Amino acid sequence: MLQITNLHAEVDGKPILKGLTLTVNAGEVHAIMGPNGAGKSTLGYVLGGRPGYEVTGGTVTFAGQDLLDLPPHERAAAGLFLGFQYPVEIPGVSNVQFLRESLNSQRRARDEAPLSGAEFLKLARAQAGALEMDAEMLKRPVNVGFSGGEKKRNEMVQMGILNPKFAVLDETDSGLDIDALRIVGDGINRIMRAPDKAVLLITHYQRLLDYVKPDFVHVLADGRITRTGGPELAHELEAQGYAQVAA
Image (cartoon, rainbow, N blue to C red; front, side, top):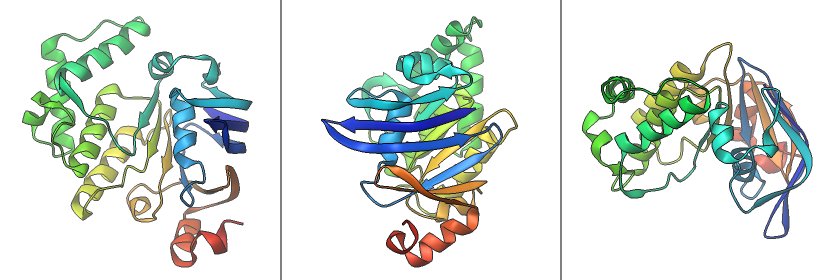
């Protein structure tokens, strides 16, 4: 589903990704772990098409398309979802308005009929309920006044509504307490565990992987994948630290 080959990228002229190669097949969950500054978030931003992250070499193919050749909105319409480490606030725009426009713009790009207001509200309330989020929060401006955990839960509601093929989740466990971690982990499994979907889960810690069990764990250090293993690698990293394991 996703094929990254010898990817190089820089920010403000500084090389961050230095020959990263990774393949994620449909039906798989891959976790990427690594120290601060290794390039984990940069990888997510490059895949999502965030401005300011310049690809200087390599290729990325998603579902048979050249991902790097698509603008961000076309990547989203093709089925790519990027979950942010720090979800942004959008004052003056309600969750309902934002999500309905997002979903219907993607449906139009795929030549699907947009959902009516009633159809969308039914879907949004179902997704909010599955993530134990008060449906009243759907009426509030996007992430404004939300706690860190509420922002992450709201982002999982967004993912459930958009129903992507491939999710890149950047430190989704950041800011979550024990109960919220379980709810978000269960949400990822419910929405994305399917034979025709895949997940790239970026995290510092092993704790989320107790809920979202990966097929593969990769160590990202100095802009490239330095080691790959199964779920046991995350426990090894937790016990020994990156300095002992990453090289």
